[in-house]
Every structure is written in structure tokens, then in C-alpha cells.
Image 1 (cartoon, rainbow, N blue to C red):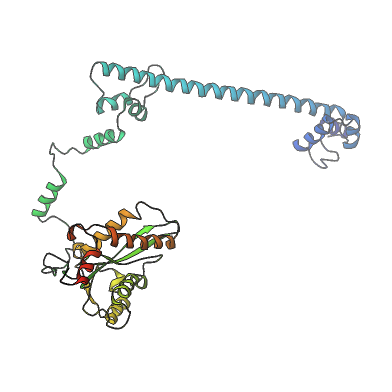
Image 2: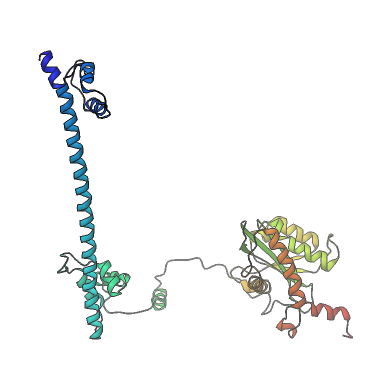
Amino acid sequence: MTERRRRLSGEGGTAGEGGRWSSWRKMEVVLRVLRGEDLDSQSRELHVTAAAIAQWRDQFLADGQAGLRRRETDERDLEISRMRCKIGEITMENELLRERARRAEAAHPFAVAEGEAVAATASPSAGKQYGLARVCRVLELARSTVYAHRQRALMPVRGIRTSRAQVLRLTRQANLLAPTRSGHAHGPKAHDGTITTDLPDRMWGKGGTATLTGEVQATIFIAVDHCTQECIGIHSALQGTRFEALESIRQGIREHYGSYTSQVASGLVLRHDNGSQYTSSYFQQELRFLGIESSPAYVREPEGNGVAERFIRTLKERLPWVQHFETVDEMERGLQALKQRYNQQWLVAKHDYRTPQHPRAMLALGPAA
């Protein structure tokens, strides 16, 4: 190829030594021309004919106009397609609504099987199937019922209707149940039908529960007298450890025995469940130091610790369930206030609707009372 032909076609030259001009390089030249640079000076600088640069410019402008026109056309076609789809959806729903109204007037609503048949039918206007989701939504059929109907059709039960309890009874009689752990035999009840006492400070009940604060989940430990129903001690903590579990017992010992020394509570029995805090060696050693006898309730028999459990229910109904606490310290103050209010004002049916402190006060007055 001669130098003249290369210059006319735009090949060779400064920007394309040994090769053809790239499209990006041509675009740079065209943009310089469009920004106002002289075409002849560009031709001399780049060793490309002015005709070639003009051809690049015209082609660039033509392609750009075509691209803009094509994009405008594509967006318009897309919008038309979306509108047609929306109109088709509305038309199909109107068809279903008219059929539903006609059935309602005839007092013959759609059954599940009929709804499935309609879902598989093509709309005469839109030319596509109604679909199960649309049919269930417009005709107010539960899709779960449709799926259950399909499952029963695949796996028929042969017309036998029964209940879970009856199936369980029959399989148990036929010895078809999987083996399970039945637990250990507990023997006779230790409390012989009652766990309350006739005198205070003979048995205390111990229990705990968890509740939420603004900080984190906290644990509440309580102690209750089995005779007077008094709240002996109450304490909240971020972590329900064996150390925190003893705090409610310590409160009761200091208040009702006057000191915290070895064997100070000799003769007192503590009823508790089998939680890890209460069965720990630290907790049991502290009870032995105070002279308290440990009396764990039977496993799977919460009624053995019923006094504490009943107080926990009252506690929940009066404080954590109706009042929100941001911190554990704030909840601790609320618990101490509840303890005082409960012991002084709560009416107990066992005491002829007197307060929990009434029996202890009567005993303090002696036989003359």
C-alpha cells in the first residue's frame, strides 16, 4: 500500500505506526474537531487527510444519532409491553371476579377442585393460564388447602378418619411405639399431699425465673416461707450462678435469724428443684454451714416446690410482665419494693385473706392473741 493510500484511508501515521488506527484513537481525533480545533491542522499533525477525518466525524455523528433513536425506541417498546402485561393481569382478575359474583348469586361457591381446574384454564382475553396464585387470591381459596387436596389425591387414606390420640393408643397397645426414657420411679410422695408447715421458719421454698431488661436477660431468685407465704428474700443478677442463687437465702437468714453464723438456721429445711445452681457443691456446703437441710423436689414433679412456683407466678404478673426495666439494678430496686408491698399488703386465702406477715405477728403475741 502506498503512502497516499494509507493517508486517504487513515492507516499508518503517527498514532498507528506499523498498524491501523483504533476506534478509540479515531474518536479522540473527532472529538478534538468537534471541540473546535482546525481540521487542516489536525490533518497535518497526524499525517491523515482532511477527507478521512471528515469521514470519521460524519460516521461518528450518524452512529450516535442512530444509537439515541434506538434507545428511545427500545424504552417505548418496553413501556408498551409492561402496560400490555398490566392490562392483561387486570383483565384476567376481572374475569375471575365476574365468575365469582355469578357463583355467589347462585349460592354455589368455588370448591377446591374447581379452583384447580380454573387455574389450569387459559384466559380467553389474555391467552394465558390464570395460575393457582391468582385464582386463590381472587376466589379467596387457601393455597394450603389446595396443596393438601393434591397430597390426599396422591396418597389416599381409604376413607378412614381418626385422631392422633386414637392412633397413639392403638400403636401403644400393639407395642409399636419407639422406645423412650420413662424416668425413674420416685416412690411415695415425701410430703404426703401437702408441703406447707404449721409454723414459720420450718421450711423455705427456693426458686428462680428469667426475664428481659434493656441490657440483657437477667435471672431472679426468690425464697418463700412455706407457712406464712412471706417472701423471705429476692434478688436479681445478670448471670444466674450458684453464688447469686444464695443471695435470697442470705437475706432471709439475716432478717429472721439476726446473724449469719455457723448453724444459725439449724432445723430449717430448704425445698428447691434440681437446678445446677442448687445441686452444686458450693450451694450445698453453704446450706450445711448454716445448718439448713436440703430437700430437693422430685424430678418431673414441680408441685413438690409448689409454694415457690406459685409466688413466682404472682411475681411475674405484678412486675416483669407489666413493667420494663432498662438495667438490672433498676429491676433490683423494683423487686425489693415488691417484696415489702407483698408481705405487708397481699391477701392470702390460706390466712383467711390476711397478709403474709399476719401469722408471724400472731405467733409473736403468744397464746393471748
